[in-house]
Image (cartoon, rainbow, N blue to C red; front, side, top):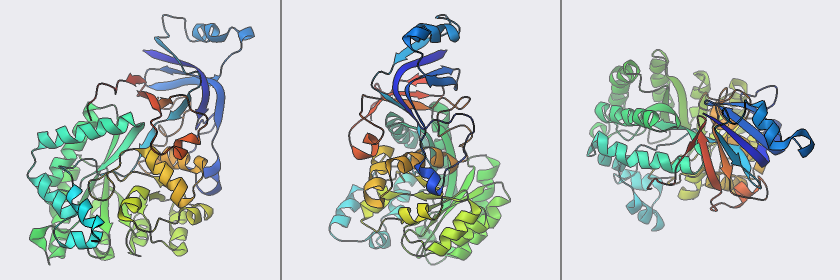
Length: 432
């Protein structure tokens, strides 16, 4: 079935002749648009886009004839006064989890830090205990609601991490749920094995033994069952060291798992150096990052993925996005959707935070949430921009005045129609 979208006030994030796999530095201010445009979708791809023909050229009728007549143009959507954007590419989430952690939210209000909550058995260990008690089917039931929630907000591609299992069976359970989400929704899903998210209670004081289990047991099983494409480590004081990370990455790449990393969230952890050593596709968080590490990231073209939702929730210093972009880095934005430090599913909110708190321009946040997010998942050849031949993942807004309205109006709903893989997705019947 085909779809013809007409009278579009503005198509945003267009690529015409040559496709970019990412945009870094000054290029992040580049945002190509088409005013009064159309998009023709055939199958799961964008076949053509451009400016609407004028009345003298036959208008809409001439478009219909160009694409084979009414019998071939299955659906016509009038987007008068509306904008069309590529679907967001959310490259860092922990979307598969059990329960919630609002009790810790209260602890935080009372003055406890993230580290103090973790030492009391909260944080990641709390989520691990809840997940252990939850069946795979129930975990899927809870997580699929979140998947449809992000679709409704305009996300079309998502990375989902494990990391709340912290033992072989529960880590595999999480990754199996992520696979079921990929199979039962129109989302493009990339899965990441994050067994090294925290040291489980039963290995307290024996971190090296847990790292050995990740290497000798978990990684081979994850790879054999083809449950993940990426490997991640929380490289931070009190969690996993640079040496631990080096060992885990060295083992993982032998099984075809490409590294990502949680680095420099709470301190200068040294994670950036080991990430670059192993050609990580992205280095994420980066709140505490120095210019010497910018040079490493720039040389390796590792995507710097910033997570302002966590910074907002934990009331920490924001990552130095302005310095990173001025240095030439490719910066992506992601929600870090999780129950403990970023219970936020809407990329639009994240873009607003990035604009307000990290002084990124509207053009930069749109690039960061679309093309560069796709690059951080290895999807930018097919996702992240609106171009001929690319996957037809996009959304149509309600009438809005400009694309800058997206980061400006942090909580105003703007998504009216979602199209994923060339099909209009009915999100109104979903219960969240």
